[in-house]
Length: 183
Image 1 (cartoon, rainbow, N blue to C red):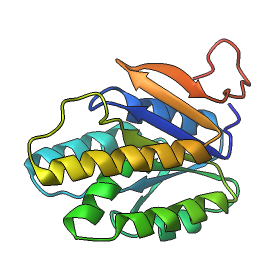
Image 2: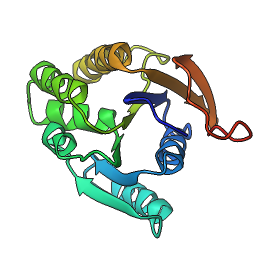
Image 3: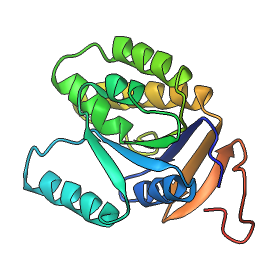
């Protein structure tokens, strides 16, 4: 599969979006770089990170831990590589928890993405389908995540929504090398 320059894979929690994005990157035939944004803040997150690492083990992935300086990590990706940014939601969470200026950081991220010499696949949570959260921080996150996803989707050539492990193309067309298994 030939990847477009920028792809966004959206979905709810545990929807299969990361597995799907990993498959996209593997099928590109390029050297794979995993840009990890999650931080081990508790036992549950440690287990989640370990599961993701184990799934990629032995498949030639190079992992770059970039929970805060994600734009710089992406800027270092070379042609001949594919970057998988997993995930935008943790990146945004990290910024908001640290009282960072997520809008400024989003502008920087978008600038870097438009200058990439290699394809990028981004994973992000869709938080628009739930109820309005009861606390101010959660509502601010929901609004910010919605804006971030909209801005990224506008720049991406391919946007895919994954639900129950099943991809639905929202924007663009995958370039198929293998018609029998495009994903």
